[in-house]
Length: 82
Image 1 (cartoon, helix red, strand yellow):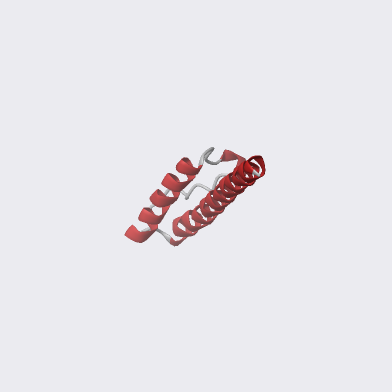
Image 2: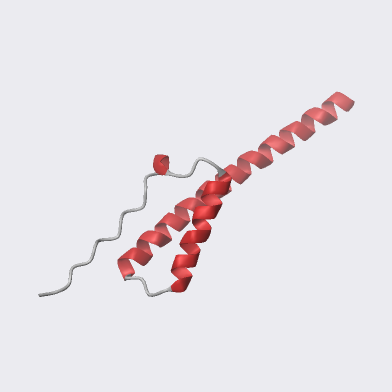
């Protein structure tokens, strides 16, 4: 009889993810650490990789939004001082 193992849980949906940059960054760091440690079954590694890609996208979107807000604030400050 073959030993059974619990299947890897699927990557959460986009609306089931972190709500802040810090949460996404921290979870991404955990995913990377688990992948770098190795020893995981292929399916679990792939699931983690997909989650990492998702989290990297979340971080990028949040950073882009922050950059736009800073640029907008700087533009308003330039207009006010002109």
